[in-house]
Amino acid sequence: MSTTISVTVPYEFVLNPDSPMLPPMAQADPDSELMLQYKAGSMAAFETLYEKHKGPLFRYFVRNGQPTTVAEELYQEVWMKLIRSRGRYQVRAKFTTYLYQLAHNCLVDWVRKQNRRPQLIAGNDFLEATDESATPDSVLARHHERLGLLKALEQLPDEQREVFVLKEESQLNLEEIAMVTGVGRETVKSRLRYANAKLKELMAEILGVDL
Amino acid sequence: MNPEASDEYIQRLYKELDKPKPPPHLDQRILANAAEGSGTRWFRGFAVAATLVLGLSIGFVTLNQDTKELAPPTQTQQPVAEEQTNGFSLPSERQKRPQAKAPETTISFPKTPIPSGSIGTIQEPVSRNAPIDVTVDHSGADPYHDFGPGDWLTQIASLWENGDFDQAREAFVRFRQRFPDHPFPQNFPVSEASLLIDATPP
Image (spheres, rainbow over the protein chains, first blue to last red):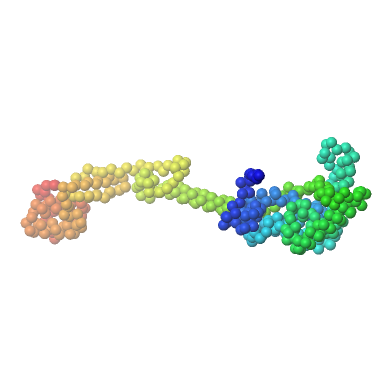
């Protein structure tokens, strides 16, 4: 017995796979197509791209331990690089991979120049009662857990933290993270495994519980 | 807690963290920079420049036309004719413009008798206000149309010497009508009075 599932795809994301106008990668990646449209002069395409990626990209810098002012500076630098180089843009990978490659390079340059440890706590996370049924004790406990996670992230090695944040914020897969960071897929997989293990260990110490 | 559950716990906790966003002024700055480089901005600039050039051109042409119309006429001319020859002008601009007054001078035509047989003879006006007579007679050709006074008198003398007195007299009458003040030659074969005797104007 077979079951047929019908899926309705929004028109904007239906790309003709036989279209000669689009490179193969762009045919599979709507963001790459938007970037090509921006390259051709469409400001609306850029606005769509910007709205989609601005939050995760900004958090990439914040979660990697940069103060808000630095995160803003790096964030702006990435977009400016993208705008300036739009004329040379060619689709060789997913647009997200391209964007985070720029971000990774900016971050690495900055860290090399500053040679300082990340500061994750300042300006991040305050008490937020998101669940109305939660008791004050549970809200406080959740807040401590989030602070614990931020502290644990702060203590992670830079490479492990970046891989973890990239996976959570950009939704890239292991191969794509490998392209962004310039290492092999297995290295990324290993860093991610170590990052998770280290976070659990650190949080157990901070919160005094066994995870 | 088993490893998979603890991984999920960390991921869930991460997603619960607040989600800082770039400040609005940064958004505006980046979008402005993006717009500056996009084709839309270029096209807008081009459109504005083209509109300016077109507007200035129309203004220049209109101003030029106004100057011509308001200038005093150098010759007797009719405003209608000028309006027709001045070419293009916007109707709205034409309404706004002060109308050039038609000159008071009127051109009229005298009742000066013209010999029969003359075609398209135009008697030149004595002054601007003097009447001009234009009579077109299709009854016959004027044999002296292209004659100057000297040639004409030579022809009259020849007619008289050949015995064609009537033709000579008729030609002299015409001659006098066209050249009333031309001096009569002293060595002419016949006197002026003789030529005018029995001369019947045609």
